[in-house]
Image 1 (cartoon, helix red, strand yellow):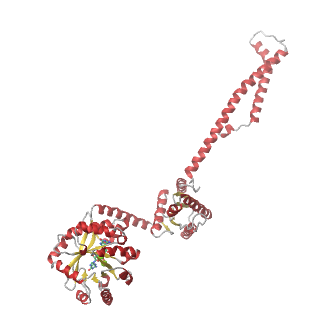
Image 2 (image 1 turned 180 degrees about the vertical axis):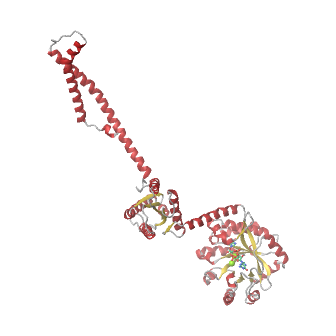
Image 3 (image 1 turned 135 degrees about the vertical axis):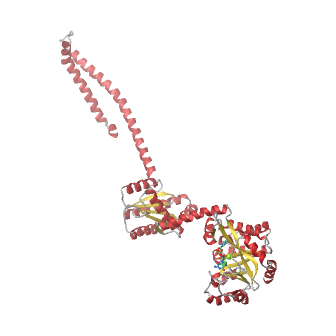
Length: 535
Ligand code: C2E
Ligand code: MG
Ligand code: MG
């Protein structure tokens, strides 16, 4: 189309000149030859000795007329052509702008997701081996938040330029898929070691400082790799797989790379199904407390119950806490569930004969939450359950994260008469540090010390009991079973252990059974007063 508008003034002048000459020639031919011949042909009267001057006047007049009748439309046409040409140029520019916007990222200049997908689809359709390196920046958000978006933009441009260098080196194409997500598209079937080397180069280059932009950048990159030769042959699945592999790296501490692994994908899907089911379970109040009796030694009378969470599914099956407590924690639902368990247990305890104590397991996040003490105290008041009958079980791992916050919170609760016990003692850090820095009232010796065949652990138990005595702490021995060490409770009592818990005295059970067991045993009230006396 552009050829149509390719003309020059000289060309136009020549055309006009040619037209005028042609008109002049035709006029001469007509006037001196064809006119007489035509008149004769039609038998019309004709004055042959017409004066030459007259004839030339006619030639000039007709040529001039022809010239004038040509020049005017040509001028109009020229203007028209020039306008059309301008519009066409504008249209061409707009078209190229649209193309650029449609296929290129305006900030980094890299190809965008659309162009990337087009290329990927095209290569896969041609059965060419393709490798995707999906790259997500680590810690980009703090750069934006702390230094502003213009610095963030400069970082994106710098990352794009570093990726382009790597792409050039390995014959790949760099793309920005959006936000802080980039991609290298490689059209080759390299060895795994070579692909790993590329991923390592990407991580090293993107983690390198950017002193002229932001100091320190703190940036890193997590890379997910998928290959058309082993993983998938359609574009969106291949990209999704690279994304899954990248996500895995994010979960496992970032600044790393992973190849797509279908097994991991299955586990991730199972986890997200579990998360969904658990969220529903919490809404439907399917997480309920089971109760395991705790007995005082040496009399073995029940003095309290540990609240142990169980998920009773709609089909009646029971899920153990080890399978869902960590998931609830990740979902941020554990605090709400703990509150619900305590409320259910307090309600159930009203029907029990005796003022039994309740032991509640508390997660790390709850212990360090500033709002936790007041919320718990308010709940106990609302439930009309005395603080002196509540025991909180915490693990040492929970204390390691933020010891000061834990100490503040636990001291506040202890001041109201709530007992704090250190659960699973002997399995974690078991440092005297935690015992002395926090006012721990009680330790629960982990059940692994009393497992069948663990008889050689008894000297250790003896040592723990001696230590607790000197620190003026009470001790509960967990996991006391019926089938080994028949005289274990007596041995524990002799060595100064105050309480015991385990299948020998009762398994964790639902409320109704716990109620039944309380009816079959001596009143707990007596035992509790004995316990309080001993504290
Ligand atoms: P834990 O607090 O140390 O609870 C004691 C665990 O030992 C319970 O397992 C109990 O069933 C088991 N056990 C008690 N006696 C015996 C015995 O004689 N032999 C054997 N083999 N095991 C015995 P469970 O109920 O599966 O709970 C496991 C862990 O889950 C608990 O350990 C606790 O850390 C956690 N958990 C349970 N419920 C909750 C909860 O509501 N909140 C939080 N944060 N954690 C909970
Ligand atoms: Mg416990
Ligand atoms: Mg325990």
